[in-house]
Image 1 (cartoon, rainbow over the protein chains, first blue to last red):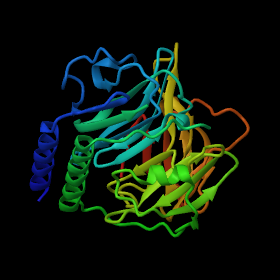
Image 2 (image 1 turned 90 degrees about the horizontal axis):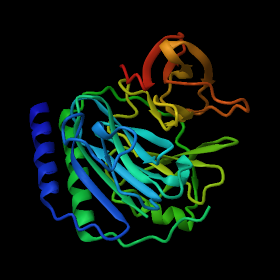
Image 3 (image 1 turned 30 degrees about the horizontal axis):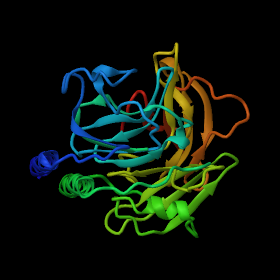
Length: 129
Length: 201
């Protein structure tokens, strides 16, 4: 059953990935495999570019993320700038949303999802200004 | 706090979200073997603010209800039910416009395998390179009595009591350099670790 669940997760993830992105101005959408080496270096990221996915600079006020269920994995989801990174842990199978104000990160910043530990999986990120 | 005006979310965004969340829920329902645990504190219902109602319109399939679990001098924690599936939980700062500044919808909390749902904020400031806890708060199942704050090399720095299934480090003194948390039961045994060092059942 576990294999079935994981397979379905991957299939649904791939289906989701195939949908048009369609992000409007002030929105950021990203999904894909997120672990070191999974997608190469993300030049948008400042703090942990080899294991993160980041939005470009903007006045991001809200971000959300979810990790497909499966083997243990943990992501730091939040915001970063040149001097500071702040986030909350999201584990495999979790979904969460975070206002920048909750992390004292209002202002010009980057929304970020950083792989931290575990097997790695597909991750979905969204942010808006 | 002034929140920015809410922008319309397009159909592709909604479709993407629903598809992935459905995958998460489906996979969990097929794979979960976690022993369920209880949280006795069901909370007190509160009337959602206008900002709350905006946050409640997320794709997380929330019912629109908010239950206050505990309020401290700095933080409040809430239970936020979903129409289908396990409850979500939320955390807000005392001065926040919305009670739902942070929402977490965990796939395996509350369970014995995951006895705490940690809302702690982690981060770093240059020239730091390693993450540390910036603030510490979260939920715990019945039976977890306190949260031990661990520094480098697992050194115990302080302990935070769990009251009404909620823990908040609310001390006036600055937070020490915490790298991870340990959940402690009534026998003073570590039942779980979270933070930079991961988790254990």
